[in-house]
Each structure stands twice: as C-alpha cells, then as structure tokens.
Length: 216
Image 1 (cartoon, rainbow, N blue to C red):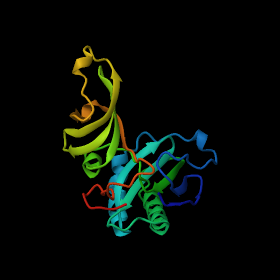
Image 2: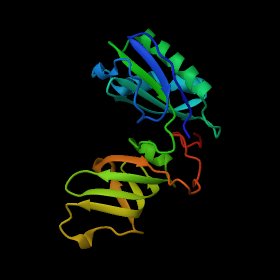
Image 3: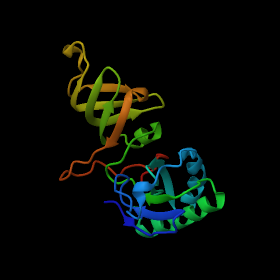
C-alpha cells in the first residue's frame, strides 16, 4: 500500500504529495497546466537527491505528468516510508525549488512512494526489480506484451522469464519466444514497463530501492 498525504500552496507552486504516480493531480485549475518544457527532470533530480537522503528517503524517479512534477521516493532502509516523511520531503523540496528558481510558471509538485506497481523507466529501476513480476511492452516491428519475472538487468538489456507473451509483427510465429523461456530485451526496444502485483498471492520480496538496498 502506498502512503499518501496532501497539501496545497500558492498558484506558482501548488504542492501535493502522496498516491501513486498515476493518481490524478488535484483539480484547482490543473487542466490549464503544462509542463515547463525547459526544465529537464534530471535538473530536479540533482536538487532532490540529497534532500531526499537527508529525510531518510532514496530518490526513485522524477518526471513531468502534464503540469505536475512527480517526485517518487522509496524508503532508504527496510522500513516503509510514511506520510510524515513524505510531508517533510515535500515541504523541503518545494522550498528548495523556489529558492533555486529553476521552474518558471505555475505547476503542481507531487511527492509520493512508487507503490507496489511502479513504472520501470531506467536501467537501475529494472535492476532494483530483479525477482519481481513485470509487464514490458516493446516498440518497433515486433510489438510485444511480455509478462514474467525479471531475472537480471544491466546497462543494455533486461532478462525476463516469460509467463505470458502476445504481440504482432512476427514474420514467422515459430520464432515467437515461448512461455517458460528467458528473453533478453534491450532498453532501446522497451516502450513501457512496470512491475505488477498479483493480488491474493504473497509478495515474493520487499522491493529494493534504486541503490540496491531493500526498502519501500
């Protein structure tokens, strides 16, 4: 379960924190918000990472969703991250962003934990999800939807043991990988990926933070 909390701020920097990254941002005129395109999430990551560490969190991801700046953090130890920690981080990061003045215009700041089902966007995300069940969608001529257990990941590709596979574009269906086989998928082929949790079944393990330490 993901801890949640919420708060609002002035129009330039309305803040909310909590929920999963796919939860709708607060209303309050957000339909008119657009991501400040000049601000690269990596710039925010550089600012947010030490602040997250000081509040006992590990930065997981930063990305724009429309006019919402989404900052995802995990626990830096085996203890789960709670609402109080998210609130402290949200306040400190909001103040730091204002002081740095790197984002012009109105936006929403959302700070939350990734949750049981979280997006996998970078090599370190896949490395931190080894042993977990995931859904990977590929792009290009061979468009596939692959469900299975992540076995390994490095800077170039992820290996997944196939539990389900479907797709289009294969010239010869006999070349299609089969359930039970291990498939290596390069990061350049991946259009979208996320971990998936089978409700009603025991969790395999506690998800690891991007640094490789267990947390959440």
